[in-house]
Image (cartoon, rainbow, N blue to C red; front, side, top):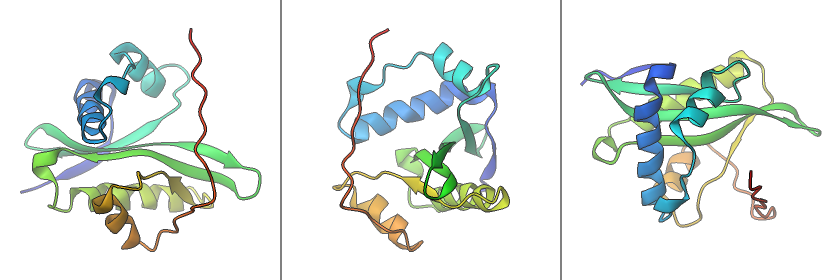
Length: 151
């Protein structure tokens, strides 16, 4: 099996959004994905893109993604925020997540960002074990906060 890791293109977005929906179902929140394909494409490939991504491609099909953006820490400077790393269920356990994570980490280092941050659900043991292999630090002090804005 030959997996190609490459930068995402606008034409990848329908397959990428399917993986996002698959992740939402895995995380027990299938109805939480409300972003439209138009918003998704525009946010990544419009005049002012806010996210970038790598895709893992196998046999002409997108089987994994790493979607990220830059955040700014007043304490640490520019950091890469890993929004999602997703590998389709039937392709997990074959090193695709590692390939995507490594490529994302390389980009972070190449751009000289001060680090990479992300979230993981406390019950997602496979993901936690994966990140521990990289020596990731888990922070139990901060509480996630969000505010939905209705447009």
